[in-house]
Length: 82
Image (cartoon, rainbow, N blue to C red; front, side):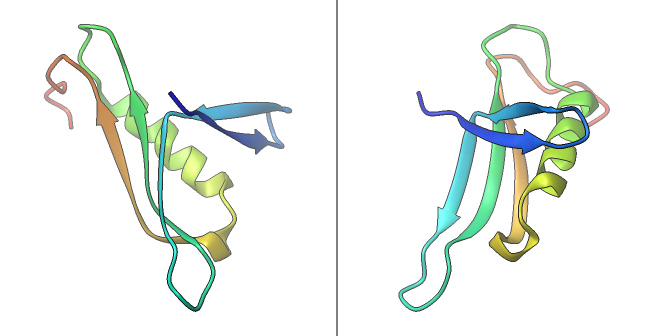
């Protein structure tokens, strides 16, 4: 399993992302197209996990983020709010 850590200036600690998908065009800089969180519990994922991913997307360098999608993966179903 590969984790990516993002520096968080306001919290003065790193944040881990379980999934980072990037595209590398032949002539151009690598762009991040998706980030995600993987949970191994039977607790449904919900709005707090998606809000956390949105926060982390805001910490990524804007020049490297394209139309970035956020995804949560879990053996449980998603909660009704998402």
